[in-house]
Length: 350
Image (cartoon, rainbow, N blue to C red; front, side, top):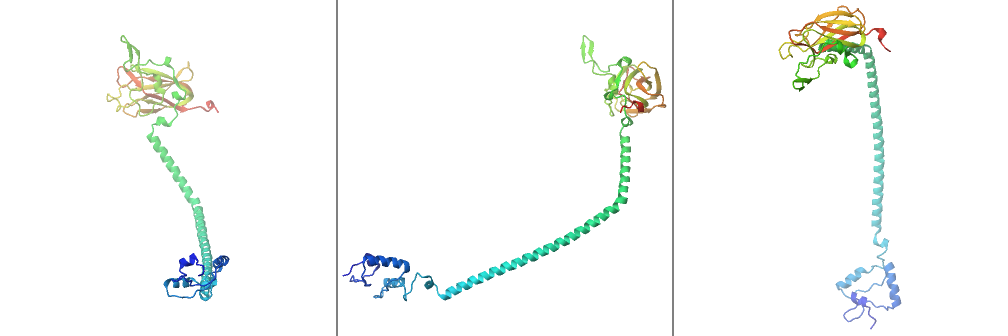
């Protein structure tokens, strides 16, 4: 009995009588070479079918038929299959080429259309610019002059409204303003009358009163004036001497007091009634009477009076002389006093 291979025995190459269905003489060397060659090329000897068993059919299906090589590329695919594959590849290549060509033509057409649209837009923009330039040239002659005239009229109207809303004293320079350099000569001014009770006393002797002095008159408080924020002197007659900020030719003076509507008594009894204004050129010089005026307690708080003759000279000092008031028996109040005029040219410093 020939030598039995365990591998062949497991695969069913021996029949029931333990006789091999494949008769060949196998040596270790040839078996080794045959196995390597079988892995490379798949060649082998075709066994004969001895039984119609399913196992034998499976073995025959696994072995090569007609002496062909199952591991060869050309034996796996038929010529028709290869030709079909080549045809499909050529069709795909042709289709891709056509798509690329068509897209390039479409891009060129789109770019040319975009350039044409840009050209039309540029022409329209040029026409609009030309029309705008022509319109500006037409407006430059007439409309600009008309606008300038309207602006001038508006400015004049605004200035007129401002003059109506503001007191006349606020539209002229004030040379009796403390913040501008004017000051009160206290030793040549009437004594202050304190209308409010003292804040500090000692055994009934007043030591300190609320601040009230002639400087309040020249601090430039404008309308509306604050009730009680004034300078008062005893009685109905009194005077105030002011050193002006600059030598000036006096044209107007302004006297201020709260109106009767603001007074707690219903009437401004402590307001000055008749007063006179004097100009003094030097500290020890003679006084020059510039005018006498009457303050109306039912009028505006700040009342401006024009001097009848403002060519009497240039004055550095002004004296306000109160001749009477409107009925208060104890004191007279002055809230504001202003001096208006023009500085001579020779006194203007460059």
